[in-house]
Image (cartoon, rainbow, N blue to C red):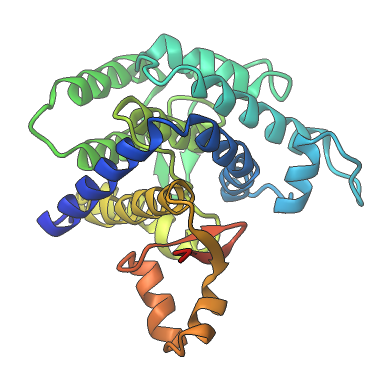
Length: 292
């Protein structure tokens, strides 16, 4: 549940972010570009891609790899990066079935052109675990309904709206493939429209933190776990950008713990709970250190 305390924390972080970003767009662009391999790696790894973060970086930089990598996984990395960069220039990209299909074409083009760029057709059923997605004949109207609900529900807190939309989208599973990556792209599209930075849904811990939210939604129609998860991810994203925007020295959290004789377990848990302004970069917890 997004408590009032959490809402106030995001509000304060967002205010400072908006104030500092006004004259530092070039720095924010550099942060986004440096973060791109992490975003691509994590989203594809959630879908069982075998690429490592370093291999993803090399593919995006067109560098040689140390092992044979399948053509599909190469396309998955380059296509997803292309969609992310495409959306960077379109922060107010409209939510619509047609626009989702366009993004899906960019995402799956060259991987499976038989169903890239279109929602499921008659006879195309999909299953995720024990969940059988709705009949293809219902997909378009269901997508339009959740889009309309998202756009019209002005009273609901923005993270709770995004949470519900993601869970509904993944339950509908509108495409034959690529639904998870599409859903995570849409989360960041929704955040960008509201002036927030993107979040990274981490591959590490997906079975304990990410996957169970869908069972909770389908079995009990509850979304609190995912709204809390998104709160932590957004708080972390804001803290990362604020550390750079403030001109702080970025240090490993482990070094910060040693330097200040802190309790390692308690400080790491505080980072995970976002009660200190720590963030992950290339999978390592870091924190901004004020330069005196």
